[in-house]
Amino acid sequence: MNKKFNFGNFIRSSSVPIMFILICIVSIPISGLSPGYLLNEIITRMGRNAFLILALLIPIMAGMGLNFGMTLGAMAAQIALILVSDWQIVGIPAMILAAIISVPLSVLLGWFCGTIMNKAKGREMITSYIMSFFMNGIYQLVVLFFMGSIIPIKHSNIVLPRGYGIRNTVSLVRMRQHLDNLLALRIGGVKIPIATFIVIALLCLFIIWFKRTKLGQDMRAVGQDMEVARDAGINVERTRIIAIIMSTVLAGFGMIIYLQNIGNIATYGAHSQIGMFCIAALLVGGASVDKASIKNVFLGVILFHTMFIVAPKAGAYITGDSMIGEYFRVFVSYAVITIALVMYETSKRRQKKDAGEQLKQAQRHGDKATSPSGV
Image (tube, rainbow, N blue to C red; front, side):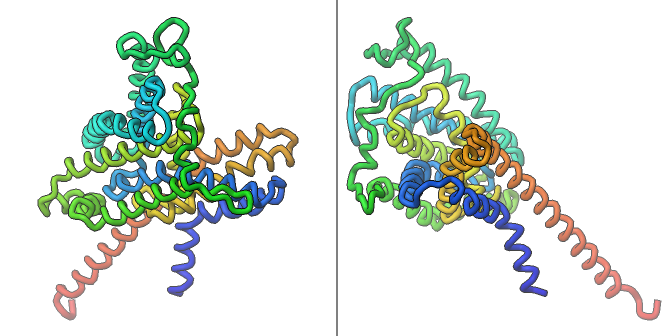
């Protein structure tokens, strides 16, 4: 019975990864893509996206759920990249300077987001989601009006013809794939961006180390029970704000890695879906709202982006219209988040129900033990 129960729990907790494994198994042969092309695309997307997804782990550890507010870090990174692009700095130095510029912006935005989320305990995810929409309006104001009018922008290939505001697309050709090409290996036609993976590995090591620090232990305590953590002398509100600031700063760094791989900035749209796709990939890897690990990140990147690669081809083969595949993968991105949230809420209610039944049984046994014999 115990083995059967454990197997059932495994299937229930791993239903999303299992579903995506089945989708990929069915779609890969139908798509007709060669193994070499598919492997090359998966490795490229892993280097492009893994850092961003890893930025989600710290708020989950602190019990704040899925940080849709990581979009704020992406906005800070884009502003930094626009400035660096205007200054005509190239290569790795341009990326480093953009990262340095993004830090104070990310810290400020993360502090603001964390402060608001402290006012909405228990509803952090929806709060961060709406916060990303609110800050998107501020971002649009900065890049559409302030840049070129208040913030000096020198080069006309970045500014709109009217003299202020940033064009829809900003080229990053001067830093395009400079990190990916640094120490890159080619094995059988497959490009492996060694330097990018080293940066990602360093972040993984940092997260493992950080969990063992005093602050990391405090975040885990806050994530388990805020009241118990407060009674233990932990400043709960401050700890939660630090978690969001760290996530926002790391998201900014991840967005720089992402955009240097792409080679341009879609000024008004690049950041808008980044949080949704990163969260969907993490959930596909088997993570939940209150529990996620590094292995969930990499499994999620592989499964989610394999589906992204093969879905249009499979859709074109089955229906004759590749747009069906595009619609399918966008639909799945939202659907997997919905399924994961429903499963999390169902699991919470089941745990509360089980805890209530155990409490009732304990009370009944207590009543029997204290009742007079023979009565």
